[in-house]
Amino acid sequence: MGLFSLTQELAIDLGTANTLIIHNGRVVVDEPSIVAIDSHSGKLVAIGERARAMHEKTNPNIKTIRPLKDGVIADFTATELMLRGMIKKVKSSGHLFSPSIKMVICIPSGSTNVEIRAVRDSAEHAGGREVYMIYEPMAAALGAGLDVEAPEGNMVIDIGGGTSEIACISLGGIVCSESVTVAGDVFTSDIQNYVRQQHNVRIGERTAEAIKCAIGAAIPKLEEEPEDFTVTGPNMLTALPQSVTLNYNEIAYALEKSLIKLDAALMKVLETMPPELYADIVKNGIYLAGGGALIKGLDRRLTEKTGLPFHIAEDPLRAIARGTGIALKNIDRFSFLMK
Ligand SMILES: Nc1ncnc2c1ncn2[C@@H]1O[C@H](COP(=O)(O)OP(=O)(O)OP(=O)(O)O)[C@@H](O)[C@H]1O
View (cartoon, rainbow, N blue to C red):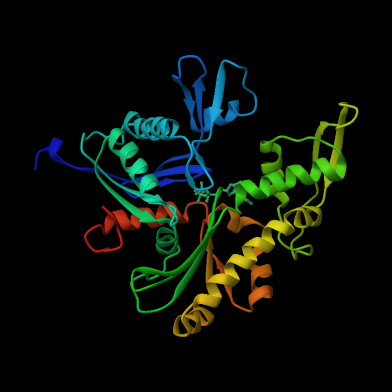
């Protein structure tokens, strides 16, 4: 086989918060899903980490866009620009040389046909010759190392940036699932609102996210307590700088109303689950993946609510990409891959 007839393969986790690309079993792109665009010409200024550094700091000549929102494509043009740019990064780093690219892209399970078509079009315009899709919970389950084809119930909760997807899988298919738009982005804005209402201080999205990653908690009493987090922002009334020191139990309080919605969605899936599969879940437990799985004490909270065992997938931020990579390697075997 000549060098140029070789097909290169990419697994892509196109996420609301982060986009990851796996090539030859290695993560070659792991960047925030964000683009910066020249407001006048519409030309791309930056993507990923560089664009994120500009986020909330732009002047009227540049705008930053997060092309995906609530787990779906909110801006088609920006999504395509981002995908193209990220694939170009793989190419320019010398990893990719073939003009023929086979791709598996992970999409939210609630995607409509129009959205699936949009992702496919973007991928094809970005150089994909053979484009397959996989639903996110399936990729999360594969990434958590579960045997999704077994005649056995396996359950995953993928808490991403825009959506949380709860699904029970058996025999290579999703038996029952729920998707809610309560995930990382909502947790971040909960924290922003809390600091504003409780402490009269305004903070930006990035600061709120930093608080969440450092001391975000799902229960008010943790075994390993993180250190308090101090932020400074303008006072709402005086506009003068004010520092606030936050404890993790305040953040648990701030997140409570969103976490209750997540609990409810989980209960809904458990209620509709066939009893034989339920018995498997009692034995196997439920796997948590996605960045939200890193909220401290979330596994314990959910165990207390349901009495079921919970496990956090290894490296939860990369579990979905890993699963997409496994699907790519087994394209001929996995009937649940969509073409
Ligand atoms: N240590 C942490 N604690 C809490 N949240 C975290 C942590 N690290 C990352 N996150 C959050 O996880 C989210 C990103 O997760 P992930 O990359 O799995 O989402 P995504 O795949 O881009 O989104 P979606 O699945 O909705 O398309 C962000 O909201 C981020 O703030």
